[in-house]
Image 1 (tube, one colour):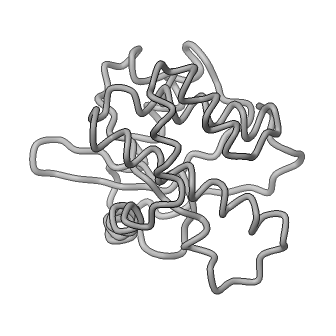
Image 2: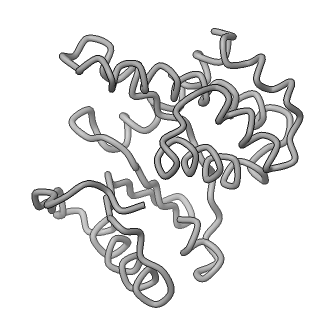
Length: 180
């Protein structure tokens, strides 16, 4: 999305989806459960930022947090604090990490996503709008993330599939860890 949005003039509204909520009753190994809890705290911070600033800083904040969590393997609230600083946002937003009032916003965002694509998916979930028409799809999951013309071509293919009412799923087994 970060690569394609400016290339294709795509407006983006980033929304929260908590794996801590999604997998609360599931059989998830402890390291993933701990990471999901920290990621959930980060989502609370993001929701607080959005409430004050709208969409404008959210893509950058998600990218900064994601870089620290996934590329640098810094899965902590210190990483969220560093991401806030890197995006020029007030460090006081970190106080939102433990504020459960943001969970209502997160659950609402998840409910909207599930309403569009169902429960047997993960993230990312993309929702496309054209006037009153809407299409939604889980994916794509890519590694490494394409850039340039390759990213644009993938986007075009994903949009074609998403707008096709007969398309449901396309998948293959991962052959290695994510390349970030």
